[in-house]
Structure formats: structure tokens, C-alpha cells
Image (cartoon, rainbow, N blue to C red; front, side):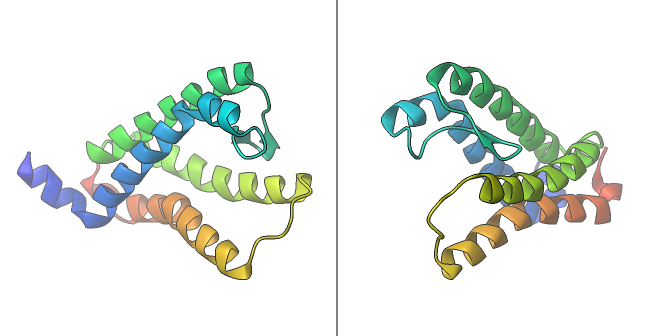
Length: 138
């Protein structure tokens, strides 16, 4: 087991933990929406879902996908590579669609840069890392 952890490396270990945190956030989307409808709610392909019922169904569904992804990374499963590639395409598309479909006050350049760095490192970076190190996947 310790051998598998050393084989996983620090980057995949950190990304696994972050995907679990993201999954927990998705599981609580309905509560987030109830707490603050202006901010809470799940966003899928740029569309922000409003209403407790939508978030109660879609939040846990996407949470399960992210937990599955985290599990596949943690266990270094070969099936996680196609999922990582799909997620790597999904995240930038979701970001662009959300920003183009919603009339929001523009955030600071610093916020945009940090948000893009974190989201693209988590999605595209993980897919590239897994593809480059696919010999580690079982």
C-alpha cells in the first residue's frame, strides 16, 4: 500500500484530495442554493441550475462522478485516463459558457487568473499528468 502511495506521487495525491473536496461541495449544492440562491447552485455546461430539486439531484450526481474520478486516481486505475480527458475538456467549456451566458459583474483580473490557474491545473493538468504517466495505471 505504501508502495502505491509513493508511486502515485504528491501531485496525484493532492489532486485526489481536491477532487474529494469538490465532490463534497457538489453534494451540498442544494444546501448552498437554499443558503444563498444568488451564489449557490450547480453549473453544468454554463447553465446555473436554480431550485432545490435541480440541485438536490444534479449536485450528488456530479459529486458521485467526482468521487469516482478521485477513487480512480487514488487507486491508479487505467479507466481514469478517459475520464480525466473528458473532464479536462468539460471544465474549460463550462467556464467559458458560464461567463458568456450570465451577466455578472466582472471579477478582478487577479481572481480570474487564480481561478483559471486552479481550475485548469485541476482538470487539464491532471489529464496531462495521467497521460504522461499512464504506465503507472493498472
